[in-house]
Length: 237
Image (cartoon, rainbow, N blue to C red; front, side, top):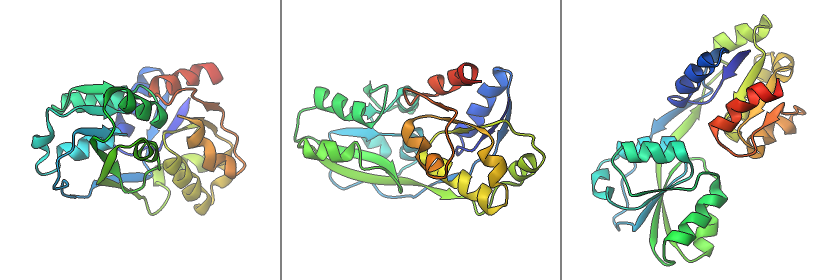
């Protein structure tokens, strides 16, 4: 299949290479660009780190003074995030292997209530797992380490491919990137071609903006893992 990968880099390129290895033809054209914020670490050191994306790990590694955090427990939402944290020298690592709910439960099982958590996150983020952990009695601080900026217009390569009928599907890794992809396609006059694609979503949450526009996701991964999403390409085609 000819598949549009709209997630931001560096994940987009990695996904494109995996798709090519599976025999697909990827069109890597992100609709979000991740930028570090340069935010400073809080003055009070945490007892553990909470990371909910690979982008958070990469931004944290580039943050001034991050070396002082090495040796602290790191609670990571999934295997990719956990592996990047370990490769960056952080840890010990605890891998929730799932979603925000799994991550909150892992923290509760491993860390005493009342401990200080530093959530390394993006400028736009969901309430969970922070809300659940705060209610459970953890002291939660947030380091806004990166921001994902929308591209101003539909990437030219995608516009050309949609106009020529040269795309079969799109992969969606976040609710925000799915929403921006849909919005930019509509604004460029290619909304009909976009809606006609097969849409593969990492989770039910990711599919929400598509469904709000009347688009039925062709495949939604049961677990928010890339392995499950890519396996769906064969199962749902």
